[in-house]
Image (cartoon, rainbow, N blue to C red; front, top):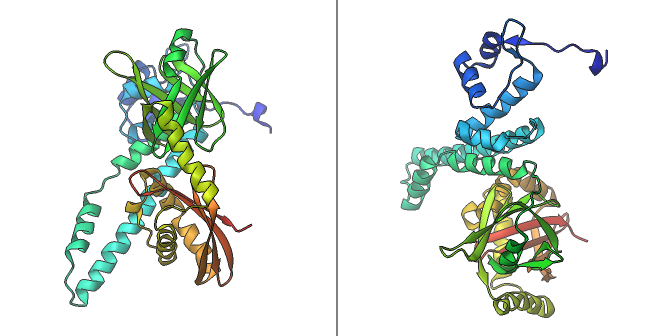
Length: 360
């Protein structure tokens, strides 16, 4: 029987609450908040079908991330249930939790083995243990929530056209220039080395991309002048301060010079060699990575190690050049083949990005 021929199955409030593991009172509260609107029978009994249960699943997932019902109501207002987006968010959160658990287990097993052998734990090992013990899932949940919020559908709104001139200008985003241009009543943005993309108004000072899942919020000072922006992407928020055109040009010319002269960042080869060796051991140093990169690296650590195991011992690292975005590129030779590794450093000296692909 096809989908059109199947009849909808309905549950009463009591049946729904029992099957999900919540109270009928919670169902009433979600209804009062406007989060669900179950249909009713002629006798005024509430019924819960696939649409209502899908929405409840979404609500419970967001509650798990620590959002209030008011926050959830604002987030979901006017939007149909998106189970794929919700499942992707949960998958990411669970993968991060699994990776952190595996890391903690490996650490405690190693320390216990050392103590059993009669060795004394060093101050550095004790500090790492204390830090790991103090970690909670709050940061990961916050990232998952922001990813969810950033991925939700956006609706373009009309705002005062006079505001557009406030946003046009130059901004310093980590080590790159972020340029916002006003052209024919529309706003376009460009990050150093990347193509220009249009942004669309969601509200005054709030814009979104259609080409990628990212948003821009412009920030103002007490006098109302735009002094910076915040890029919302991949569950993280990056602030950029406003700079003059000369400062932005200097940033881009510095990268252009490195590209022309094939000049890697200081100590570039040694940094990459260290990263490769850490991944070969299965012990990446996430503290030396920016938070977005560390989150991604945790997800892919096992896959990277498996690939490196197949490649065999490291033989040589050869510098190839600098990308338009300012990334150092290397050909890395192993006993069983070659890989191209590229990376960029953030303003604080940590790795801001690492990319691996088969060598061309």
